[in-house]
Image (cartoon, rainbow, N blue to C red; front, side, top):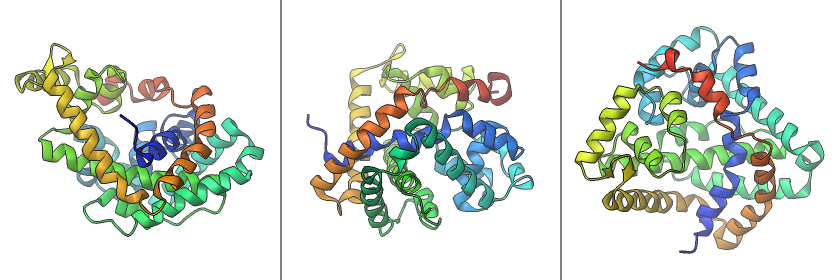
Length: 291
């Protein structure tokens, strides 16, 4: 099946956003502000809400153990402000992108063009906030000036637009946040320990969710059943469909051009090891963040 231009644009550009959670610069900046890495993550991504408490963040982040979030929030707000965390995330992105791509590349016409395309899509998405609380909160943040940070911020908005739609699809399918990541691991596409530890779930909780999915016929052993594959494919199709309106203003040609411009940037980021989950897994720590 041919990949839709809107999905291609999101998928190819996504590493330029996702690195902010995984690069060592994140832990360094959070430590400077007095936060452990996972507390920094919750505060930085949740800062768009203001001084959000654990219930709102758990609802909108969806697949994290609420108990893990409650250990970080609202305590983090006694140490930092939401404004500091918004600035911290931009600092992390800027430092990491400069390290990976170099100042000359970031100042290139190609990055400026990609930034403008992504920003156009994100601004269009901002006219469609209904039912997308985490995305809507991010639309109120100020835009940075540097083109590479505009690109990062635009992709952040588009990622949260897509993410809110994905949560809607999961809720409609009756799949919890923990069950969603168990199913993801069952595809073989992602490391199970990374998702379990960084999302704060214990082995017993993971095993109980796995057994519940087997009882529903969505898993056989530790793998997806035929029904499980059908459900997963349906969820991805629904997520793509719900994300597509953000890119409507670009059209197919604009989406393909955005992917063309960001593909070499994302490949460089991936080759530089900036999406390696090992550091975040170690930072989360089994003993600290699972019950």
